[in-house]
Each structure stands twice: as structure tokens, then as C-alpha cells.
Image (cartoon, rainbow, N blue to C red; front, side, top):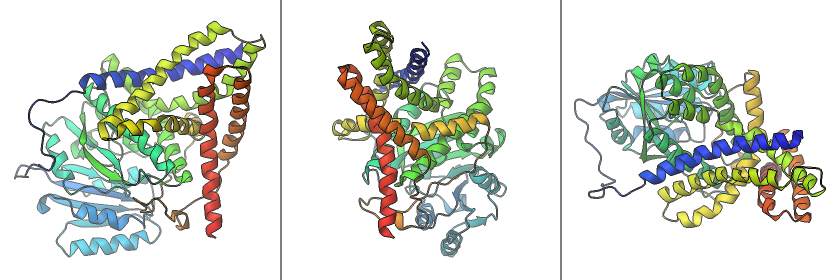
Length: 494
């Protein structure tokens, strides 16, 4: 029976990625112990001496009028010997951002800062092209990169530079923090997922000697590492992931520093989140196509190849979420009318809960590691899980385009400088896009379909299946209603 085979396939794939997270949770738990000795002073930072390298700070921008001044001023406040620091504002903007950059660059130049405004008249290679263009004249041995929505703390360079203590270290990544995590349900869900990625996934991959990735911002590269790996390339939408794997396949070592965090502004509107998720998902799939063969031909241990494969293909879970959502309720109905798989089939697939445990423990350990009130925060997990499932249609579309080799532009994520506000008027910005995209109608249909399935599951008394079906229903409904609500906000504002 084809539906039963497809549903089983979906559950096996989801179980595989869930077990990978369960492995990470186990590794994390084993290493989660108190360290001997006195508690380190969080304010203690090393003092640079004559041996410290020169650092170039690169700020790639494209139409960031709301946040660019905040970014430039934060980087101007970085504590590092001025003779060893230069800042490049890599500006591809086509709006008033360029004027704002010029003003801030002129302001800081007059105060003795080595800062330059590099404006391109085209977006060739997008962010990768801007970074590579800046490297042509960069003088730094180390290259720090910050996206427009980040605000590095003044001691960022002092804390990360010492981790380049051996010539093999090619990149050091800090953890992202969140300026507006409590601003809305949308930002809470994003913060939840990112916390697990950094505090558990990045940490465990690094500790286990597996490949990890530069996250595109809030990290520092060794210039020699970038050059040796072939430089920034714009043939994927995930230039950061692409260069990360090429560099590690060359033998460079990466480090993740969980103790250093860099605050950033999370997307506050649904279409911006969709664009960001689409770019990350498609970029990862494109990178997998590009480097997977090289990974498996390399002399890396089998565990590194296996974990790298799961890392690069993690977004493949999304089409199988849709497959499971479509097949789940009908199979239960067929079972109850005597025309589908029986109890043994569903009992065997019940082992898929092990994967669910992996997703849960990754979130649990991340919240516990980062927040004193983690016990309260963990109750948000069901809502986060449902919202993640709700993005399945958007992200499946990204994977399909990547597999077909379809090229798309690098769509930036708008930032509004709404950090820390609960009620904002971001929808009045000229950057805001509150149109209802076509994918919402597919999500709306899936919401109604899953709701009908939920009713059927309840009618037939399949109580063990109710939570799973409810996740699908609420998840697709959540992202659908978010778009509709934000569209109405824009209309009401005129």
C-alpha cells in the first residue's frame, strides 16, 4: 500500500534527524559538568601586546537605513589597538543607506578611526561578492564580519582573538544573542530555535571534532584560511556554509566560543522570516550539492562524514514533514475501517518518538544552559515545534528549487531597529512587505486538511495520535494567520 510506505519513509527520515539531535544531547549531557577552580571573572579580558595581529572588520550592507548607524557606531567602539584595526563598510545599497554610511564614516574618520566606505554599483555575487571585493584591499591578518542587525560588544575582538592560538585555527565563531526575543510570538520562536543551534549543535559538533559552520556574522576568520579555501563564492545562497566546509576540507580548524555572545535583531515580520528561512534552506541544499562529494572523497573519519551529511541535509526534514502531515490521518481512518495497516504497523512507527525526544532534549539543554528561568521557558517547546512544522511548505519550495538548480537572488532580511519593543510600527517602514504570498494559500489548505484529519482522529478515538495531528494543524494555521494578520496591520495603517 503506497500511502503506508510513504508515511513510513517520512517517519524514518524524521527519526534519523531526531536521533542525530539525540546524540548531540547525550554528548552535551556528558560534558555538562562543573569546572574545577574559581569562577572566571566575566569582565576579565586580555590586554593586547605587540604580538597581536591586525584585524579588518567587514560590514556587508544592502539597504539598511534603519540600523546602519547603530552598527557602524558599535564597531567604532570596539576595544582594540587603533593601529591594528581597520573597518570596511561594504555597501551595495541603492537607497539612503549610502548617505548615512558616508556621514558616519566621515564622523569617525575625523576622530582618527581607520574606516573606509566601499560602495559597489552592482550586487555581483551578493554578500559573498561584497566580502571578496573588500578583501582585495584588506590589511588585516584576521577578518571579523558583522551583518547589519548585529551589535558587537566593545570587548568582542579582545575575547575572540586569543582563540587563534595555533596557526591551524582558521575561524572562530561567537554565539548569537537576541535583542528582541520577547517582542512577539514570532521572535520567541526564532530565538528558541537559534539557541539550540548554537548552545547545543555548534557546541557539540565542535567538541566532537566534527565540521561546524561560520554563521555568516559574529565571527572572525584568518585571512590565510579564506584564501587557501578559494575565497568567497557566490554560487550558493549560503556563502558562509560553503566556505566553512571548503576550509575544513583543507584541514583548517574551527572553534566555537559559547561564552561570547553578540546581540542581534530577529525578523519581526512573517515575510522577512520566510525570506530568511528560504535563503538558509536553499543555500544549505545548494552547498550540499556542491561539497558533498568532496566530503565523502576526503580522508576525514566516517563520523565526520556522517555528521557533515546530516548537517548539510538537515532541511530535508521539511518535505517529509509535509508527507507525514498528508498521510497521518488518512492512514488512521483506513485502519479503523479495515482497509489500512494494522496496530503492528503503527506500533513499529511509534519508535519515531525517539526522534522527538532528540528535538526536545536539544531545546531543553539549550534553555537550561542560557537562561536562569529555563524551567518556565521549556513550556514553550510545543509552540516552537508546531511553528517549525508550519514552515515546511516554504522551506520545501526552497529545497525543490535547489535540487532543480534554479538560481535566485539573495533576498536580504529587512531590519527595523525595533529591538526591545513589544508594540512597534515596523509595518510603516518602506522596507516592510506585508503582502500575502502564494505559499500562504497552500498552507491554508493544509491547515483545513489537517483540521479535518484531527476531527477524524478524535471521532475514531485514536487519542495517542491526537497531539501529532494537532501539531500539524496548529503549525500550518499559525504561519497562515501570521501573514493575514500582518497584511491587515499594513492596510489599517493606510
